[in-house]
Amino acid sequence: TCTSTAASAVSIAASRRGLDPSTNRFHAPIVYHERYSFDGWPASHTFPMDKFERTAHALTTTCKATHPQSSNLPRPLVRNGDTDFFRPLDFADVPRSWLAKPTGPIDATFFDSFVSGQLDYEHCRYIGFRQQTSRPELIERTVLEVAGTVLTAQLAHQWGIASNVAGGTHHAHPSGGAGYTILNDLAVTANFLTDEVLNGETVKGINKVLVIDLDVHQGDGTAKFDLGNSRLSTLSIHCASNYPHPKQLSTYDIGLPDKVRDKEYMEILESSVNKALHEVEPDFVLYDAGVDVYENDTLG
Image (cartoon, rainbow, N blue to C red; front, top):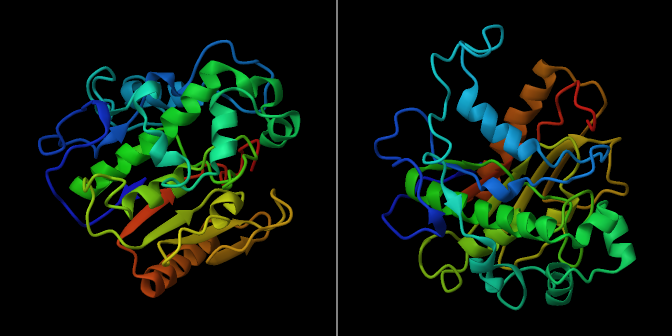
């Protein structure tokens, strides 16, 4: 999720525009690409590749009529999944310059090896996808979700807030992936927002980006990116005992003990976010909405 107070009528990196935010009374802009998920993923794999498709389906179907025990919505939040979502650029149209050095923040050799399906065994093992890592479908969806977060940021710059159905790939670092994340969309987007040459002046006036990461796991990969000139700051609120080990040094790290209850968590969240906002004074916030803080999450 991305938030900004700026608004301007500029072009956006979309293969299809969604519901006009100026007339949409039901939700802020939502970004989704049907290839965020793909068929043929091993059913026993720890990473549920269909979760992006299922999330989009839930947004277009969940209401009181379909889920009377859990929803009070008179109609689904998103009425038409074919027209209401904003769709990021297709894989072939995503500029390499957004992602790989010298203009992007990711090591060029690693990036080129990944997109060509040539990563070595150790890289694939550390990412966690192993032999799946070279699959064209996985390469495509990995790049697509980064393009989706860039588009989400452009929409938030225009309309104040927007969200991406995928992304938050916070374990990926400048020269490699980890923890089922390969290309760090948060770092790529922060770099894009703060470089008006790179973004073609589609976004102006963004000098400092704050990443607020509430995944149960520390955003260790994002913490490793140094964009220079204080362009990127990171706040990670995570479970101290959970992956990764060792932890990295974020701008702000809040390592929580196991089994923190809701009230205590919300108090820590409010004070930590207020402190970071006050001290960093960001022009833009990227929120990594990790849902694995939920007590019944299998990875949390």
